[in-house]
Image (cartoon, rainbow, N blue to C red; front, side, top):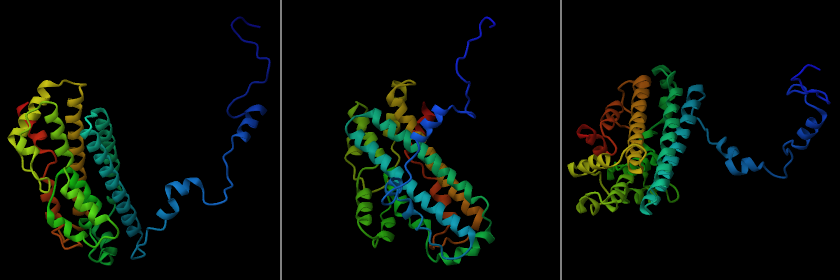
Length: 298
């Protein structure tokens, strides 16, 4: 035998030619395929329920995609709201590491949500017109789960509660609670105050049931946060994670605007809104405004 070569006493095997022992192990590890009721996976995920929720109003293939993607977006809105409420919980306990984890997860969820718009790029005005009339007055403007997202980001207009008064179950009450409760940004500012930053007491004591206006004193706070905290520090990471969230939210609004512009132009929205003009106006509003304006001074 040549020097350096090993003597194999048994037959050589490969992934394409497994040994008998390996074959026996595969058989022993085979997944369970018999269940007395529905599969445990379906019992947990409720896929059989999800598969029954696509009830289109027409036979147009494009409507099925439109409905499925709308439902996916609603699930993402619910997920984002969950993450931000989680972040608020940990902010109030001064557990910034857990806050950062929730914000990073929400940033990544946003990227999945924003990717959903890709499926709309094929839709021309004739494609949308083929089923648009069958939608009646139904409009994304009426999404109560999206309102949860906006309220948590601090965008609060009491008029936007009215369409949801007759929601089933506790959804309307939950939405009113979210409207009146502190936003994610409110809890961030309260946390910064507890860390010794000069957040004015009147800001901390302000009512939380309206959109808070830009405040130069809060801009001063962010300028100081960046001055005090370098890369890798948790407060710097907090500022940057919030910036990521705000940017992804603006990206979602922009993609929504472009999908509407591409599929229906400047027509009036199905729910009676100004459609394109409404979305253009919404795009101008930034989440966490002082976090953005402080960059000019840093």
